[in-house]
Image (cartoon, one colour):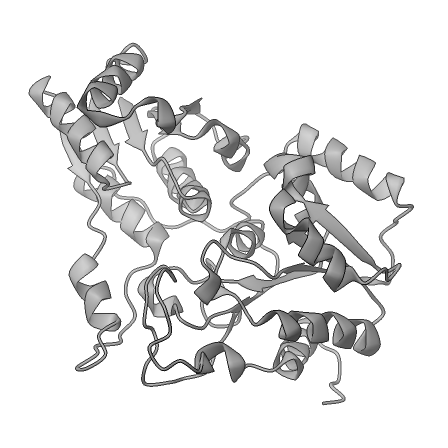
Length: 350
């Protein structure tokens, strides 16, 4: 049985495919899965048997003609017995229509848009836990004839290149893992409304260094390096992990060595959780009930305040209609310190 799986972006959503694919391959070892996604996401699926990742630059496939060219570039990987569309975008739906025209059964994810819209209403809000993204993925496979239970993690395996990049990073900075707590901190997100106010991030870094014997690893993109340097403030125990220089592989190798990760509702928190490492996800405008909580840490890995206006967005791509950004401003750096103490089983001084 040869399955074509479509999930083009975004990074965290693609990474969350790993637990689902592990479940399917474990129960159905004779199934072959051809995953179409972005090429740099391939490390998320290292060492999952029978999963073949084909990286595609989706910018090359614009418009209707581009979708048909994408179909022609994919079809030679087949023949396929099923198409599993886990993206549910206009592009993937149109692509699936071509496969249907070619008599290939297609199964498309139900993203629960109506239920999510009910969560973000200003009035008559209905806030109830929705299925996790991983469970939604597994549901599509179930409808396609492949029911499978979730498996225990870790769900991302770090490959040898990742380990090499991480080892080189640590050696160049004379870092050796000992009694010191290694804490990752990813202060940024794809949308500004998902980010903590920057001064709170500055205060958190200072508090961690004061409260713990710790090294802090700041995660961000190349475009965020100036702010990362501002957070580091020249402290010898703070190190910058720039994805632009290390890439996803290097970041995964470093994450594997960390004791915990602090971040926003963003990919770094999800990746760390998939490595089965403790996380503290700071949620404000978005909400873990929408199905994007840190996997298998839906309660322990979340820091949030309960407000009637939350959530006001599913993805963070909005503005605060209250104008006070209370959902993030009411979370204090000392709250994060308390959460760290809970995770590492240390007595808190706060």
